[in-house]
Every structure is written in C-alpha cells, then in structure tokens.
Length: 133
Ligand code: H2B
Image 1 (cartoon, helix red, strand yellow):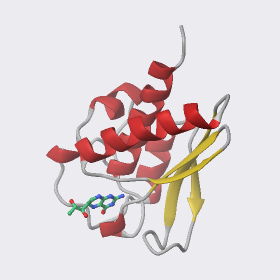
Image 2 (tube, helix red, strand yellow; image 1 turned 180 degrees about the vertical axis):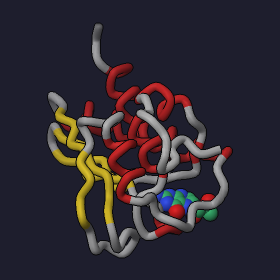
Image 3 (tube, helix red, strand yellow; image 1 turned 45 degrees about the horizontal axis):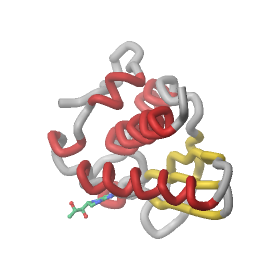
Image 4 (tube, protein in one colour; image 1 turned 30 degrees about the horizontal axis):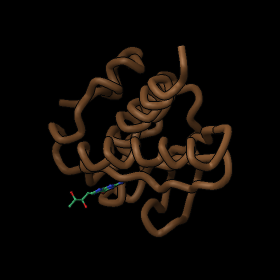
C-alpha cells in the first residue's frame, strides 16, 4: 500500500503517523520530486536536505528538537529508538545538551522513501506526547 502516488492529492500528518512501515515492501527506489513535495506538505517542521553520507547519497529528512536539558533529550531519543525498532526503520540521532537532531533516510534506497516520512510523523507524535498539556 502506498501512502502517496504521483497523482495523489494531499497526504495528512495523521495518515502518515498511523501508517506502519512493516506493511510496506522493501524500499529500493527513492520517491520522485513530486512525491517528496506532496509528503513534505504534511511535515512542515521537517527539512529535506541534500546529503552525501554513506546511507543516503541523495536526500535526507531532518528536524531539530530542543529540550530543557540532556536527560530530556535522551528520554526522547530512547522513545524514538523503541518506535524505530517496532517499525524496523532507524534514524540517525544527534544528541547534545538540550538538543536531539533526528535524521531519516532509507539505506536500502540510498535516499528518501515513504518510510522516512511515516517515521518522521511518528516522531512528531512522540514529541507532542512528551509535552505537558
Ligand atoms: N533503517 C533505515 N533507515 N533504512 C533501511 O534501509 C533500514 C533500516 N533497513 N533499518 C532495515 C533496518 C534492514 O536493515 C533490516 C534487515 O530490516
């Protein structure tokens, strides 16, 4: 099941966050530019970046999350790790005092696939869940 097709209308954040990477076939092909733009509209806080790192020779999806201290950033990173294992899709995490930078790409496709957008939406939900109402 594909969340997005080149002819599709808008995709919601909720639809991404509720999707399950384990139901998707192995990703070998990166999303097209129109597909990337459609999905990015659902994740306005995330930035698509050019990269030449060892996993993604094309593009990656990244967001910085600010915290009051290191322990809070580490708790958030641990929650992301549990979600990532459950989805069998794993981010790069940069942790420092008050900061967790989350970066997604799909190693098997060497770039961005819908798995990255699904997991980014789930990270947004984890952030909302960790904030006091
Ligand atoms: N995470 C990411 N980001 N990209 C992948 O291609 C990937 C992964 N592949 N996590 C998964 C694990 C694969 O190695 C295992 C065997 O399912």
